[in-house]
Length: 291
Image (cartoon, rainbow, N blue to C red; front, side, top):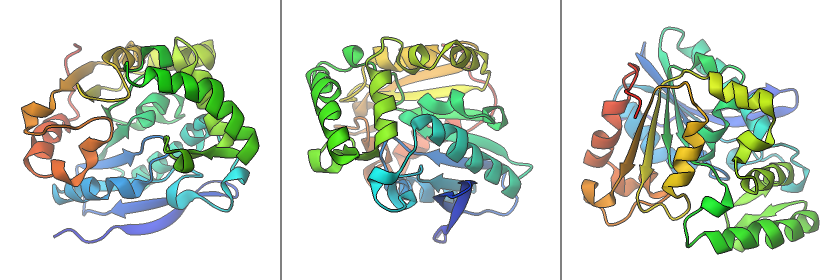
């Protein structure tokens, strides 16, 4: 039985701290950083992190600034962009992981947005492998057919009205995404309205950073993802043009489930054989074949 995680705050900039959880190990070969989806607190990944720790790997999870346990004060006062999450929060977590385990390989286990922002992390080269789960471009015209009309409504009407009204995005009230800091939501809206998503919005220097990445990537997506089409998945991973990649699209039936979707992979019902089958073969730091 694995012990409960150690909980602490990590300073990522002066007057900016984030909540972190750590499942320690003695001299592990790998440390896995569980990087969350947009607006999703690290508590959502607790069972998955616990399972990873039971395999003998050190595990670190965290909340981006303004999300979950990293919310400090009223959300309308949280001035942070998604880029800040990458350049400040993610970078600090990677540095901390290296300090704890200087001889271990580091895996960035990214759900959704955390696989998108990887190229913006200043010390991304310290990561030995990235595994993305349900990571894709958010360009709304390439979303799934059932999401596309809702996405149009969100980006053209709901977000422009609610952001100035509340000072943040009240996703919990609306049943959309979750509560998000205003600057992060505004940045995400700009990305989702552009055909090249963040690559088309954040400038040529940023495009080149993504192109320069050579970190091996395994992409795990799901045929029943209610948010992202396979076009979304491929468009985002195509930005990592020089990274060796393996891209897997999982049919829920292939692992004995009726449904997985965008969020279901980390739920308790996938524990055991499904996680063993889908994850353990891809935790090796040897480069996958590009497919």
